[in-house]
Image 1 (cartoon, rainbow, N blue to C red):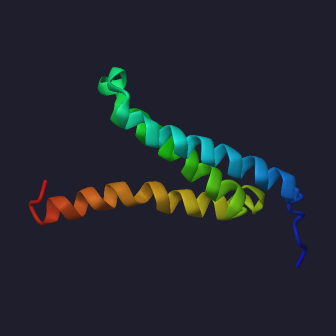
Image 2: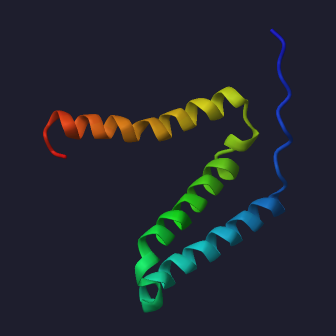
Length: 96
């Protein structure tokens, strides 16, 4: 069986940069609730920041960015497929 080449993994300095970005995003998440001017957009902003952190962790620290396309596709199919499944379960039990 022929093996496909994977992308080269990043250097340790890249991991430190990503960790720094995650720390800054976390600090912003902590500060957002105390800024009253952001009241209309607090929740969507926090969701967006959480998504940025999620994709950074999955992409770099879980090495998904450097895996075969099949693995990325299966992972994201599961991540985004859970929402319709959750809605179906709630509808099944008349909880929605």
